[in-house]
Image 1 (cartoon, rainbow, N blue to C red):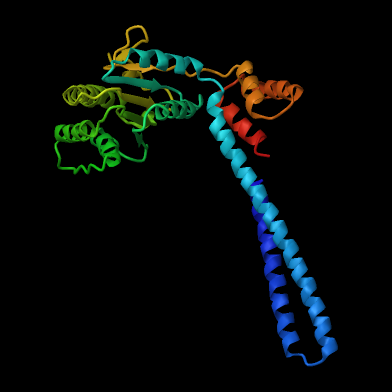
Image 2 (image 1 turned 180 degrees about the vertical axis):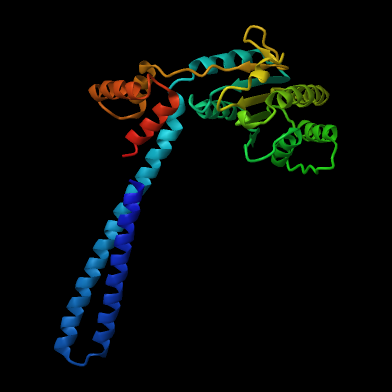
Length: 328
């Protein structure tokens, strides 16, 4: 639809430019003409051209409004998709959050197969929930690429970039860790929330080695130092949330590491996997009831069609289909 609007806009702008050129030429000829009858004819011609120009401008205005509505509709779809179903994951996060101490609370989560399961929507939901309960949210987002040789230093350098901390290649790795931890801990105030998002972890060449190092040498040290600082400065309600976002399953070597916990034996020093589920027909139906604007018979039919077309509710496929359906 956007491409069609662009073509229509281009045609109208070309038409307006052509009419403007004619209008300018007619007015110039009118000023140079001495014959009164000829001047009247040229004035009528200029008035006709001006009316056509105004009509084209009105059409352009309608087209701009149409584009604005299209863009707003797209934004609305994007903002509302996270409401479909992440109830189990959010319930677990709420339980963990209620276990946090009054001074410093921390949790390290894992999402696997997040591409097909639309994990980025859950991350958005978590971030918005954190944002709603603090005036000091620091979101550190590291996007790992298979095109880059990411290692321990690469991870620290990406985190440092969000903190205005420059790391050089000749800096000792332990010194890099200490510098970043010091920068974060010294910036804390009551109510601070630090949200660390590690995207595309499955692109790392040595996932198990880097994961083990990150947990033991960086994450645990960070939380320990921040607990010390919070006690010294009498700070309260500080939260640290880290999420590994793996678009596919982690490497088998990663899953053998002793760094995972369950909801029942939760500890901030280990990783808790959050569930990403197939979306049920009921979930899609409920979302359509709230956000589609359709009448009930159409909602039921549309929900069944979407659920069937997306292999019984694979979230990525559902998202793509909903975007296509409601951007018309």
